Amino acid sequence: MQKKVAFYTLGCKLNYSETSTIARGFVDEGFERVDFTEWAHMYVINTCSVTENADKRFKTIVRQAQKINPEAFVAAIGCYAQLKPEELAAVDGVDLVLGATEKFKITEYVDQLFTWPNTIGATKDGSSRGPAKIHSCEIEEADFYVGSYAIGERTRAFLKVQDGCDYKCTYCTIPLARGISRSDTLSGVLKNAREISAQGIKEIVLTGVNIGDYGKGEFGNKKHGHTFFDLVKALDTVEGIQRLRISSIEPNLLKNETIDFVARSKSFVPHFHIPLQSGSDEVLKLMRRRYLTDLYVDRVERIREAMPNACIGVDVIVGFPGETDERFLETYHFLNGLDISYLHVFTYSERDNTVAADMEGVVPKKVRDKRSKMLRGLSVKKRRAFYESQLGSVCTVLFEGENKNGYIHGFTENYIKVRTPWNPALVNTLHKVELKEIDSGGMVRFGFVKNMAMS
Image (cartoon, rainbow, N blue to C red):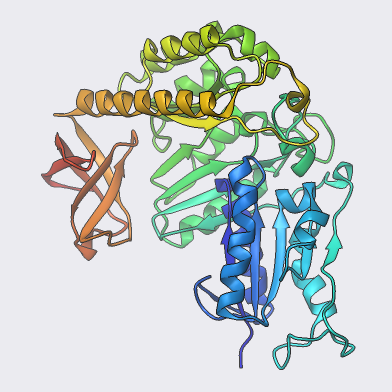
């Protein structure tokens, strides 16, 4: 019987890219990768600790695996495993916990412990599995880089170009979970991009913890080998990739040269996701962000000047300590008046070992929830207004590979979601369409522009 392994990923696109790379390592070792809902000898959970909810979900996911195979070997890897290994190891059913550097050597740890596939109920020496084994480094040791990419549906890939962060935002655990800022070599990124292209993938999404800091640690030191702009220019030359998308970039690291290049690029699409976190300068200072609102306004205006139809997404945190009613309304009105396309709203939750956890001016949970609801409502209005502004325009849609309730979905280059009745012939193809109207599901209906199929 072939060894079977299943994976569950919590958190960001970066986690997904790393899960895929780790999974390919298991396949190379003779495992068959199966869906997490299927019976497997081993279940690997790649954890996140950005929000409190991600922490809580971990136990539920372990129970799901145990219901399918009570004797299964369960491993926890990733950010939560680095931050709180003992806490994860204490969860009933968990056998192995691997931190920031160890996760990439998981097959070695598993091979040391167990004989496959005849029994997974005992260790190699025949003893019972006993307490979970923990292998978690001091985060200062997480100073090397492992390249990764994830291929989800056959249409889009997440390409990791950078890891770690040197910023000291007062609410964030990522530097504690992933270590210092470090980057793939430019040749390494291009190699992975070509591998993705060779598999027929049409779109690459660049991902990392702080991708605007790309080049730092590229050659094993703290200096920049290349810049993010160098990376953008080089990726634009990769053959076969129709679209390149920047997942998220800090406003202070989004330079004019990058914006202007994207505007004339053959591959990069007019879509930016730029974390703001607060529209109050006083709150931004408490968060130790590296910009104030005037810089953010400047970045949005520069994008709009170069690409009037660009999609601009914004991250914002509500309920941060010191966010008074006045400061929240300052954020609300700032965002309401800004020419942006949608919001990702995060409700602040206290994280151990962060400066913000000990700050004064704690916002009650009910108030946090109310503010979150207000901004989510604003996001709906912003997205609707953006979609309406694009009706009548001709765009290029890349169709995805999943049949969702009888529809096939796709995204325009500027991230407008469209749908049409399911047609498998459309999967992973690009088509010119005219955007017609917004349907009841909040997506856009369209008409194909004749004789303009792209591929």
